[in-house]
Length: 65
Image (tube, rainbow, N blue to C red):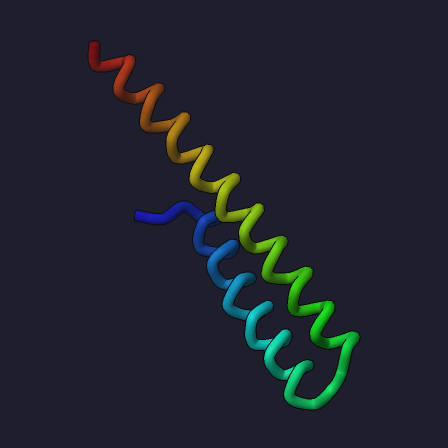
């Protein structure tokens, strides 16, 4: 199950890609740049969520030993 950061990060990537493509389609460089920023932000947030999940899993596994 994904945590909140992973889910929001994935959504930001989808939203960013849509904005980027819309910017290309309409020749709107500002929208395209905003899309790239959203996509990058989403990747970072998802990676942060992955790291939190890994730390949580490692902590829970160490408690069982």
